[in-house]
Length: 316
Image (cartoon, rainbow, N blue to C red; front, side):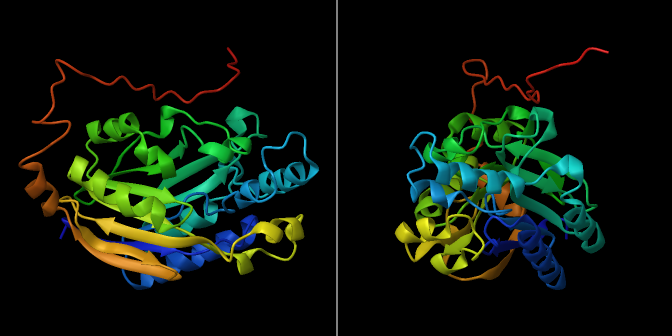
């Protein structure tokens, strides 16, 4: 049954800005998905260790402000450094339970000096290998005050049974050219990860599905005012302006015809599980294929730089 894929959307909240405790929640979700015989599990954008909600609540754009510096430092210390083995336990679980993983992390990569952080989407295959780390190309609005812009190295796709799977972070999904890059690589299962809320997922999920004639899985996190840990730096200043609900979920799946398979799910914590059938891709590509029979590469082409960017190169 290579055409069928059982997927789990992990709509959960982080233990906000706590890397170790949030990774435990990720591990628990993978184990729960394995008990349901899921073959792919997807988590929201920047779930480990969480989305930078404080920027909109503490005057994040104010220059040289102590509150933002203090929380940012705490954020960086709780980010993921893949080179240090921070995801080894996740890789081991993926291998043990034969489940592929798309995980949104805040990455602190050593190849960029080890001090700046990126919103990265990590793909781990069913044998526990990290196959791509996509650093968000353009952080959105106030995210730019804490995240650095990424590069094209993570614009990659991966085989998963009959499917070819790729993914983007949050508002990257509105960027036509990165989408086209993934389509050109043969993507037919698109993963869109979000920090949360159906106002992000309810329109773009169906649009991408209809444009690409692919399955689209959008996965969001949850975050309530009560989810901020008591040891969060400057907690009182964050809570002063925080709404009761900061992220309401909205995880969903659209089919290659752009219609809902799973409409946006709100406020539900846990796994949302569905089985999708690859044959539906071929059915819908019959009348439209954006990079195949309905393209004109003699007129328009896209050039993509997939080189991992770094400030310093050392010649041996």
